[in-house]
Structures are given as structure tokens and as C-alpha cells.
Length: 124
Image (cartoon, rainbow, N blue to C red; front, side):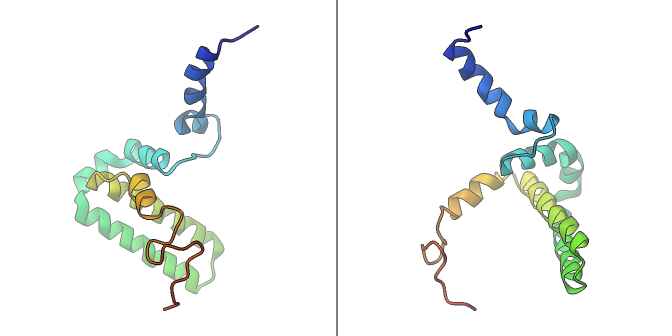
């Protein structure tokens, strides 16, 4: 069966959309896709909690990552990094910031400070 190019133009964006891929067990492929998922799952709660308390949750997760690093607990490190990313996406949702846009705007394949790749900034 011959499928027209026009049909492919309609089908390909649908079949490659992160949320479509996720339902079939594929990983989310964009930061925006993950942020959208966090919005669907938690925005009703995050917006009621507010910016200040959502930020506090994020900071608490960073502290838990520090504990995992100190104890060299790899499983806990993985859990806490995941939690930090989720809470950062949630905070961006409450702040109405597109995390993918702001990250790619600042980090355009170069270090934003020294404008090099790899970074050539002096170690601090």
C-alpha cells in the first residue's frame, strides 16, 4: 500500500510526540514533555501550595541528595536527582516558566560565562 507524503507529515509528529511515546513505554524525550507531565500530575496541588512552599520542597530534595552523596547511597542519589528534576519542573509550572526554553536560551551549546565548549572558566 502506498502512503502519500502528506499522510506522513500528519502521522510523524503524532507518533514522535513525547506523551504518545510514553504511553508505549518509551522515555520522554524533551524537558518540555517532562514539565507537561508534571503539570498534568501535580499542578492542581502545586498551584494551591504556591511558589514559596513549592520552592521549599525543591530545596529539601537538594538536601536529601546531599545526604545520599555523603552516605554514598547510589539508589538514593538516583531517587533524589529524579525528585529534584520533578520539583524544578513543578516550580517552573507555578512560575509559568518554560524550563526547556529558559535552559536552551542560556546554554546555547556554549558555556554562558566564557562562551567556550568545553568550558574554559577558571576552577573556583
